[in-house]
Image (cartoon, rainbow, N blue to C red; front, side, top):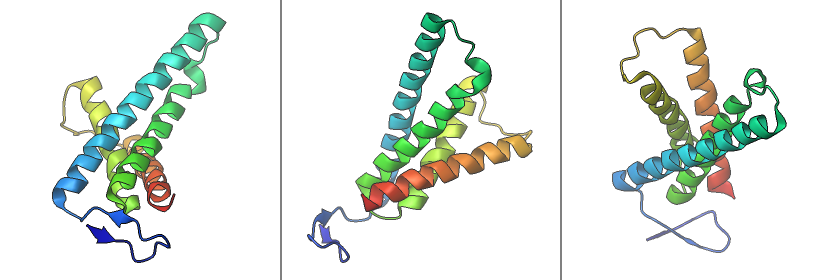
Length: 136
């Protein structure tokens, strides 16, 4: 195990390996999926019980972006380095995974500005979570 140079309490950090990054990203995507599902259930219950029309409000999208930040946080907390990159990859891969689950295809033929914007915001949200995961 390597020691953190900048840490004041010299806590142990796992060595940087490809397997560590891979499993951290997989864990981050799984965490993002779990948070997203919980958020969707919560919003659906509020909509059902309260009788509100929440679909137009975009709350599902808010929970999706919060779940990317949560997954990036967890992945970066696992690796303890390069949080912006690990978190950003979690955000992008989560969006591509959602696209694959909803359309049934990994083929991204018709990429428009809206899709690029979603991928960019997903990268930013995951990167913010990753930076927080490394630094907190």
